[in-house]
Each structure stands twice: as structure tokens, then as C-alpha cells.
Image (cartoon, rainbow, N blue to C red; front, side, top):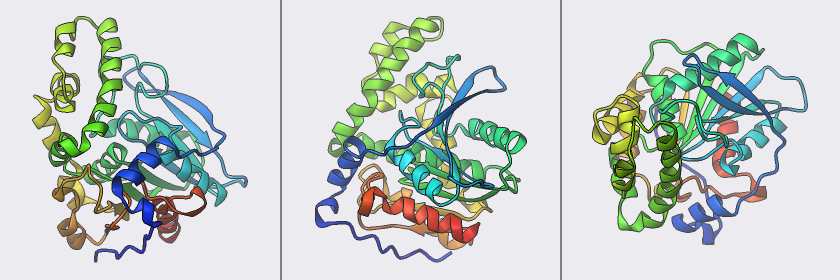
Length: 319
């Protein structure tokens, strides 16, 4: 599929990737009424789903996946939910394991390649609800999960009509290198602090799996993935985790209409995270690379972000 020429033109002060990223993460607010549903997973753990609804009865649903240490009330997912709700589509903002305000039951939790939980959400919706059109949208880590899910399997449910992946680190090793660069130190440290705090709670609950010494050895996000993420989820180490869970290798197999929006000034993404070759060789992939937007910072008019408008346009066209 030819590369899509983006027409995103933010106001001049939001053309800076750092400004748009920080503003979106710290200052944006979205008002949305949500109802929480807890589902029990096949391994006995749970997921909390935050539902919001269209004002009219609908057979359409969008499932939204957040990023690292996000949750179902973050504006970058509720903003999209609100836009879709206003246009006749129900929404689920998924909270990954341990991200809904209550620690999950198992030692393992979630990671960039944990597609099995998305499978469980889809099975729950398809088996228990009445939706014939389902759309998927993910931001950052959640976007990588969606792309990996679509490309790693032979069959995707017929109800899943399209997907949108925004600010997606489809090459996890490259994105990790970028996140550890000095230019991203503020972001890096902001991510690491809550991860360490949650791991300390894991250590209290599961002292047989990780020691205080192990936690104290963690100084970087790479260390965290080496000590916890990889070991807890069955990988050899961080490098093995990044290699096996990067969605880039699965893009060629995607057979569901998919839109990827990665800003060229996203400081989290390495050059490999702009999958031009994969998009050109797969008619189902649509790649848009705006000059601006930072990491999930596609600020636009009326508190509706550009990527949210594009997601709705894409879903409406395909649906």
C-alpha cells in the first residue's frame, strides 16, 4: 500500500515533539462516563474493562489499548472513546493486568507482546455481546500488541474490521535504545519509577520469585525488562523479549486493514519503527508519518486529536 501523505499541521508551538508529548501526557483532560466490567481470565487472573456507550443502540465497538503504565482513564484512550461514542460506536478502554488500580493476582502481568489478553477480551465480547463490527486501536505498547496479534495468527475473527496503531515502537530493541538516550532521560525516569514501585509490591506478594537485591539492581528500563519482564513472562532476557515481541516481523502477515500513524519527530522511535517497506509490500497496511506529533501528541482543535480523527475516518471507511 502506498505511504499516506499526512495533512496534520499543528499550531506552531505544538510542532515541537517534546512540547506536544509533555502537554498531552500532563495537561490534556477528557471527560467521559465509564462503567467498569471485570472479566476472569482463563488462568484465574482478571482484567478490568472500562466501557462507554453511544447514545444510540449500535452493533459497533472499538477496543482501545493503552501504553506502558497507562490505564483506561488516560486521555489518549478516552479521547478516542468519546469521539467514537459520539458517532454511534461503543468503546472499551482495556486496563492491562495490574493497571486498573488493583494489583493483578499472578506474578506475571503484561508486556509489549502479551496478545493472549487481547484474545480473551475479543472472545468475551464476541461470545457475550452483540457486536458485528469491532475496531482495534492501540497507543505505543498497546499498538505493538495489536499489530503482533493481527500478524501472528492465521485467523482473526470476522467481526474485527480494522485496526489503528499510533506511536508504535514496532522495533522494540531500537525503541529501547532511543528511550535510554540522554534526550529521553525525563521520560525514561518517569516510566521507571512506577514500575519499580509495582515490582516492590510483587516482591512482597511473591518473595520466592524476586528478591530485594534484584530490585535494587534495576537502574534502567532495560534492567527492569532483564530482571522482571523477560523472566516473569518466559523469555531468556530483555534482548530475547524485544526480539520475539517486536511487531515489525509480523507486519507482512497482516490481513486486516490497518493504519499506522508514527510521527517523524517521535523521540521514542528508532528508524526501524517506520515500516515503509512492510507497508509498500502489504496492501492491508497503511502507513502515515506526520512531521509532527511527538509520542501520542497529535494535538488538534476542540480537544480532539488528529490521530483520533484519522482512526474514526479509517474505521468508518473500512466498516
